[in-house]
Every structure is written in C-alpha cells, then in structure tokens.
Image 1: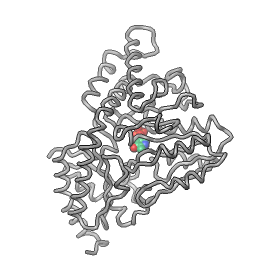
Image 2: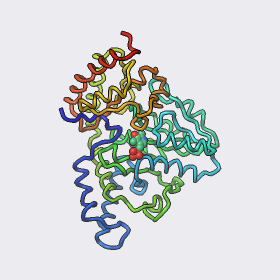
Image 3: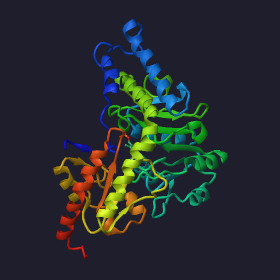
Image 4: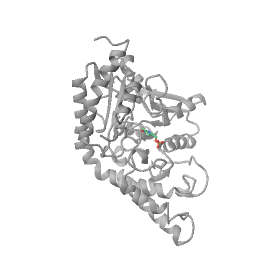
Length: 385
Ligand SMILES: *Cc1c(COP(=O)(O)O)cnc(C)c1O
C-alpha cells in the first residue's frame, strides 16, 4: 500500500483540476491585475470568476468576498475589523476549543486590555450555548465561534447562535475552515456577519483563503496598503492561488453529496471496526453531530505520538492533538476542554478523510492499528488489563 493520507484536516493535496486551472497564471499570465494592458486584464477577469465561485459555494454575493493569504489572516481580520469599528467595546466572546488563529489572538487581546469570555464545552465537545448567551453584555464587540472543530469534527449550532447574537446588535464571526466543503454552508440562512474559509483544506494550495463580510457590515482592513479587494485588503493579488481557490470551491460544492454518503460511511466503518477490535478505546466528540470526514479516537494508557510514529512507518498519515500543538507534551486544548481523561487524551489519534480516500485504505488502517496499540500497551507502565 502506498501512502494512506488520513490527515486532511491538517492540509489536503492540490486537486489536479485545480492545478491545471492555476498554472497559466504562474506562467504566461503574470500581469498585475491593476495594470492597464491586455495581459493584466486576463488576471482581473479570472479573479472575478474565482470570486463568483467562492461566493456561490456559500451563497454570498461576489462583493462580499475578500481574498486573503490564509485562514489565520481571515480570522485575525474579522476580529480586528469588529474591534476597530467599535472602539468603545472591550469584550470578546469565543470558545475554549477554537483554532489557535482565534484562540491565541484572543489571549493576546486579553493581555492588551480586552475582556475575553472563552465559553466551555461538555465532554462530547458540545458548546454551552446558554452560557454564551448569558455572557453577552453591552460591552461585547464580537462573538466568534467556529462552525466545525478541526480536532473532533464536532459542529456548533452557528445559526442559533448567530440569530441571538445579531438580534442584540453584536457582530458574529464564524471560523468555517473545517465546515466548508464538508457540509452545506449558507451564509444567508446561517445569518452570519463574517465567515472564514481556507484553500488548503479543500484541495487548493496553501497560502490563499477568503473572508466573507456581509454587505453593510462596518469593516476596517487589517493589511493596509493598495486599493486591492476594493480597499479592504492591501497587497498585490495572489492571482494563481485565487484562481485555484475559486476552482476548489466549485469542486467542493459538487462533492458535498459524496462527503455526506461515501465518506461518512467510510469514517463510521473505521470507527466501528476500531472500537470493536481495540479494547479501552473511545471516540472523542459527539458522534451524532460532526462533519462526515473526521474521527478522533482515544486509546487508553499510551502516547499518541508513539502511535503516529508507528503508523508513519507503515505509510499512514494521521495526527494526534492538533498539528500546531504536537511537539509539546500537553494534550490538546480541545481534548482538555472536553475533560477527556488524561490517560486517554494522551493516546488520541485523529483520522480525517477527503473525497480522495478509498475503502481499501480504511481496511489497511483497521488491519495495522490494533497490533500497534497492543504492542505499545505491553510497554506502557499505565496499562492494566
Ligand atoms: C487550518 C485551520 C485554520 C487556519 O487556516 P490557515 O489557512 O492554515 O491559516 C483556521 N481554523 C481552522 C478551524 C483550521 O482548521
């Protein structure tokens, strides 16, 4: 078996259709879209098409899409814009399980004079929405809640939260990087003010993303420079990558059905077979309310890092905790927020699929993982059968 790539929440391979679409803009059409000649016009036209494609995937209109360099930039921009436009407000509400692009930013803001409420989750990773609603005050500038969690796949009730938050006149942003391309995302029916999506999680290259900003929402740019993106984000457009993001969004829309059927069934089968074959294992996260492609499995009494090393030797790519925190010995902040018992939080592995994965890859994981767990447990001082 060649490489089994089951780490699509960390990043995805570039789709060959996407690559073909972007390559001419790295080769012959290198013009700056702001320039006044035919060579540049081609770039401008293609950016417009990409903007329409991104907008179409999330039911936005073209002029509500701002291209950025990454999901991290989109998240930072959203929070920055809300604070800049409401300088009198000093309170932010977010959750304890956000991606570092929101979590660390909010921790920084907390050190710089803002009050931040990090809303907790229960042991299945469900958000305590009542506590969130109770935390809202006249001083609240923005509520930022992720749509789908990158480590567990658990979905938050974004529509319900957005409705309550916006009724109170407060800005609502969602980090939908892990939701877009996995479940239908509609900014109108969800009622969000701002939404983040990122290219490299949906088979476009790394280094391109978008921020949806609802028409009429007061906005302040984060990167200050030229008039690109109608003055909302300075910096010469990353034409080829923007073209790629547009194509990737178009493909993602056409693959949602496969995600929800074939990939969901594949993920569920992996879970059921692992739980059956491996004693003292458990799924982290609400199994009834997740994206179809992610599973986070906890194996008692062993180290996730050790499991990953042994999987890697067999050509299986997965992750433990989140890629950003691996390398530290602390279990991930997401699993800690869920109160996953220490011994099993340490032995947690995330498998995340895309529409590229195949049934025989699940067979391979199901064959190879149980003996790895058994062997590591034999060596573990914590393991008592
Ligand atoms: C990957 C990810 C991001 C960051 O996106 P980049 O484009 O890598 O900066 C933000 N939020 C979530 C939930 C993610 O999974």
